Length: 509
Image (tube, rainbow, N blue to C red; front, side, top):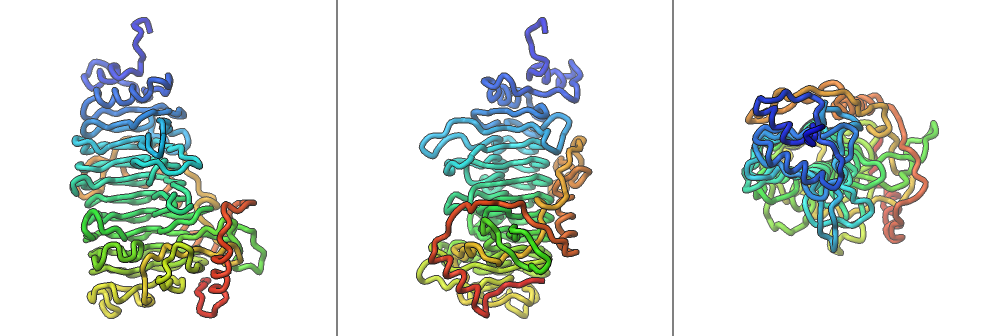
């Protein structure tokens, strides 16, 4: 241009808001030159005003050196045209790291004036690789002292720090954030204390639905109290890494155990499956990485933290009609809880329950025999007793439910069921384009996009998973020809010994 001004500059885009220039739908801020991209994106948001949309260009990678910061209400970051597949723009976390500290956050929407901001239809690569975790925030940091935010059709993976997506509580005032139709993971690695969550939420009256979470290693979805929040229709599965907990309701902080009207329902949680090939007579096989989910749904602080929170209990949640398949140590584990309702949760397809006391279990731990539904009756309220109608009838009492994630799976052996998950089914992410915002079903009715339109990877994936499991369709994972780690020989022997005991639970349906 003779004026020397880029057609994609923030000043040109601002003229659309001022009525001086009609902005084309495909206008976007380019990734090049890379040495100015972080400043250009942040300046656009800083100067764009309330309601400004920062459009990134499809099929471009943005190598950012610092977080991209929402700055005013109702701003949006999205890919032009709202694609839902690999053509979504990708933010690549590229800032420096030294001595375990450095750049970890790609997008931050926790400013004091970030009500109603939206993160839509982009990808984020945290670029951790094989490095140890870096102190800092997740790939995405949203929430804080804000309401009515939206995160949808976002792919987030490989975070440098502890989570792929964090909705922070702020001064316990975060409210009505909608997290929907995202694909998350892998997140972290399953080496001890190298883990990361898929979604970490500490926000009231929010909605987490129709998300696909593969390869998280700490918690698939970790619910930090978040009273009034709905967690539904999400699919969580593992391939070659062990996941400590599928959905966790274990954290006492920051809401002092308040899970009132926090509802976890209709989610599919898929543990490890055999991936060594199947013959006609096989019902079980080996998993090359010994991948399982240790606890499908974990409830109560003692389940996770032992006696760290003393006699404190989590209270008021609802866990209903969730479906589990694959290899776990425990399906649902309940301790230190009051006034929870836990009903209608079922096993689908092939399931096994495997594991034994690992080297991180204390000498005094009495590790329960693996099984689908366990409860430590001595640590839950009398309002949850067997005759209350609040607890499904197949829960089995145990004497000690503390620190259950210290169990380890067998190191090989034919203990894994055969089955299918979204990674080896025919479902695909789709690449259709979505239009602008529709209605938000969050509690305060802020602007958002309707969930589940054409090309919706999460909605399609969940339907495919449940349908495949329900009709018993058998699949198998792609081969992995090397073992990621060698388990301690003593643990291997202990696991085999437990597996051979008559009371060792391995269930096939």
